[in-house]
Image (tube, rainbow, N blue to C red; front, side):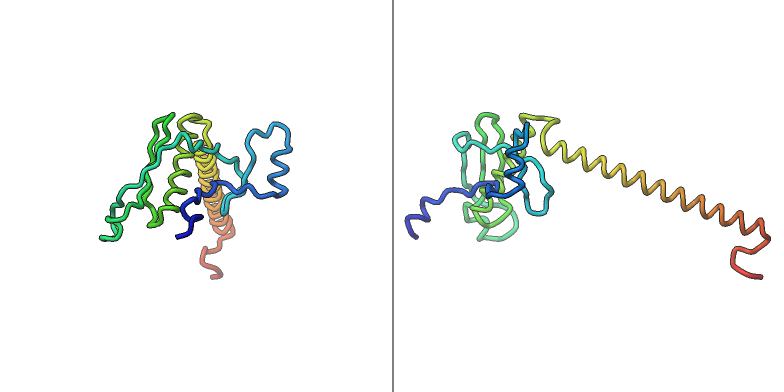
Length: 169
């Protein structure tokens, strides 16, 4: 293994490349947090970055399905945010690097919830999803009522003309 392999630092959680969206978000008045485009997600404000000095990281043996190879390797990441005392344990993949990134992302969301409570990004997204669900439910109910009224209107008009609902006599 080369020396650069030993000195490799974890990749940042957000893409900081130049782009019109990023530039517009930085230049807009009152922009406290810049919007970052995430694959598969609409523009949303980025979570505040974690201070690496405030984290304690451990690698422990894995668990769960996968047999001997999973249970013998230390690829499960335990990440602790010292100021808040929050602990995240991540063993979603066999790769330590991917587990480190996932653990940091999960911890970032938990720290946001811990400090911001109901104003956190996760709670806002949950409220928006619930609102959309209620709107869809309301539209479906209205459509069902319209269909029911149309069917009743059609049935009453066919009876008024002396026709049978099946067609011609």
